[in-house]
Image (tube, rainbow, N blue to C red):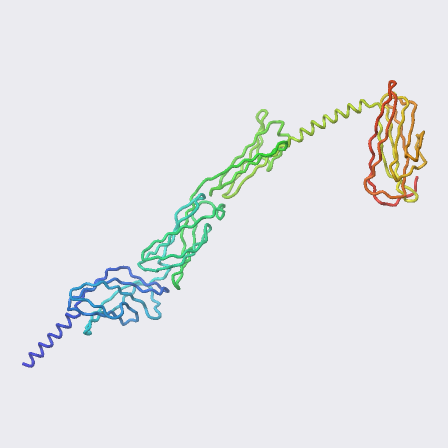
Length: 460
């Protein structure tokens, strides 16, 4: 009888033990990972069904992983409960790749069941992907993206983007299998010289204490943008400036043409010189051909100086007037001055007046005046003055008559004890003569001399 009772109690105990841990575990999450250097757990979503009487269950392992939930989880008979199991290594864990670990579910009476879960431990380099939309030289902004390729919630990450087109930092949160986009304003001056094509950009991603450097691609789409500007200014001196700029991102070949007539071309200058000059009738065509890289410009300056023909016309008019005046003058006086060497080193000048009669003249008088601060040397040339007024500093020569074409030379010397520096000017001489019973007057030129302080030698 005792034996039967013992067997009955043993059967009840075994039945109770088996029924107490009668749980079904179903994993409903997938692709769980653990990231090296990131202090975040691998997360498993489980559905646990209790087929035994009401009980509380504990989740634990013997492999050095911390696990949550901590403590016990109550599950009623027939109930299915969602359990989020978070697993994180305690201490150093250098393993990379797929990993399977064993854990246990223990009932309140000490009975338990053995389970296993698998995850992959990867580095940050394997997780993220970066990229960008295509853009062209007219784009004012560009959209970039960061994609999390794994089932892992990073939370906040810091990303520094850098390329030939931009350089900026951005912080944002990124969840499992999430894709975050961000936009950056573009400064066209940064890439106005770059040619269309594919470029790479760098992304430095920091997640906690872990960091990675990855590269993405940029498509700088081809765009032809050639702009031309023309400016005109000036009246007598006109300037035309033609400027062509390659604002696109492909190499451009540009042709520039300017036309001039056969008169204006004589007074026109070009910068730079034209590559080709072609004449068609009375029109001259000037052309330039150049290759512009992105961001480059080509400028042609065409300057026409209409002052030249105006000056030439005025000179012709002046020459004609002077020629008429010269031809209408019967007596011309040409005054010259030169330095003279003296014994005492005084300042001395020789004044010469050429008297030229173009026609027959009578009662010719030549009157000259001395400048201040000088004295008259008593020695004269071949022609002696008929009057010398030292008080008024006035000299006068007289000729009874002069034949047509006759030339007389009048000369005298003046000196000064005081040196003269700079530009020295002598007054004009005056000529009086009779022609056809009438008295006429003519004036000579004014003579100038630039003087420097120096010691003179003996007079001749």
